Image (cartoon, rainbow, N blue to C red):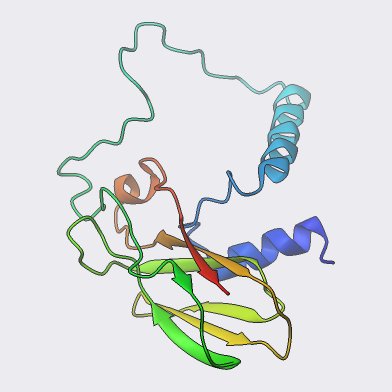
Length: 167
């Protein structure tokens, strides 16, 4: 089994723009990173911003405005469960926005990486390859939107990943 730093490095290599939010899928890693950050802030006597008690609203409400015109409101996958008849093969997948239009997509293999691979292609699609001779069971791939061009589009709240299951 890979060490924690190797898993993190593999995830960053596969998804350098961090389009796929893994927080809900790896809560133990989130807690570990939070502890590292808290320890660093304490040990370095860092200044920590104070909460603005006069702020009304939710900081988690996405802002749909002219500064992020290309950001989708929602993401979907045409077929979230794939049961290929072939033991070995390839399939291209791409997320769709709320209008059903294809969007730039990135992927991270969450489980089943011994027999399933996901490659993010330059044109914004994801190529999924599987080989049942290398493993079996169910594989889970997380897909995210990777089309942001402005900082606002990229960083203004992460969209939840879409799950693709290969059986």
